[in-house]
Length: 389
Image (cartoon, rainbow, N blue to C red; front, top):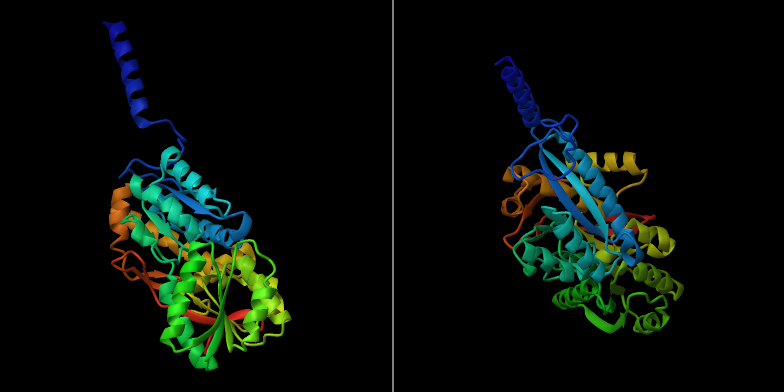
């Protein structure tokens, strides 16, 4: 009997030990829906494995790198708050739609993420977002501004204002400021974002009774725009309107000034980067761009974001970093509201986000899952963006 008692006690001890779990177990992986963990932010935090697809190399890296900074800062702040603990897995799509497809498939099928942030480019989103829609994984776009992105499906959201929301305001204010009568137009013909931007520019110019003297096209990777610019400048326009990405935009600014054009150049969202000002130098003076984020905004969330970004990276953030940081805040709010790391629950909660305080201002989603926030129209003056007045 004594031997049986000893064995029983030993077995009981083993059972208790097994139920307690091994000390020091990692909490960095995604939690079972509804489970909690002390990982990163204290007891009770909801663990969520989140993917991000960014253009960290090649043509759109100028946007992707600041987005990565914004995401990292956002995750750190969310995890410190202790209610949600995000494990972020970042994939580089190399500024290419096929790279986006590969990254989405990996994140969904291999990493088992509960949501995806990105991709950087609208052109990539049109190819990759349908994969997440089919899998029932919510996507939060942080820089896709082309038309039709959220129409891909009800799991697709974005915190970036569309070109359709920003460009009309940009043209209206620029027309009033510079008394525009005639403009020349250029756009990238082989990219969903730049083509969509051109379509909106064309309509906005017509709505403001601005005549288009000439329309020229270009392709990704082009570096010499002298032929197109010479034709446009020959029409004596009051301004040049361009829908393009940063690489081509920098060269267009530089070459337009070299050819003697001194008027305003009005760009789409692709021109929203301090890197363009840095790379184009004095040629960027007079660049007018509509933005989803106003750096000079005095809302508390923006001030704290600016200070934290400067302290972390030694430079001022751009719109892409602000939208990325805000994306993490929005997703964390949805996860907290859902009460679990379940993709369907997170998707449902995202649809209810309303008046959330963010660096972009008070943020809500429209019924169509687009951003509902004010735009800011900016002009480059003395080497920095200022609000156009």
